[in-house]
Length: 78
Image (cartoon, rainbow, N blue to C red):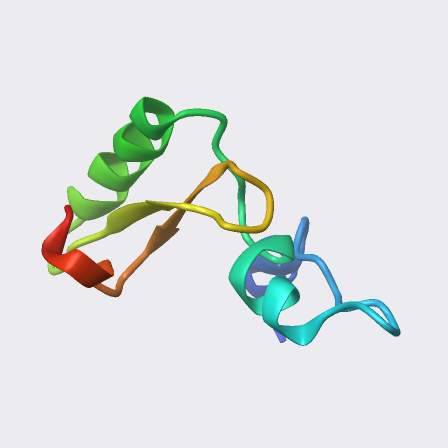
């Protein structure tokens, strides 16, 4: 693959043996933001791209930090 793919893969986490699969999917492999405001700024930047889907933020039950998602959070919170 081209160098673009290599750059995109940098910083991605790989699941370790014995690591909880749910936690890996929901938290470990994602970028963590320290505050809701920081996560919202990142979501806004991502959403500015042409034809970009809406990005939502949510508080992580595993790490207590904030992550981004394309899925609308349950309860209708934006």
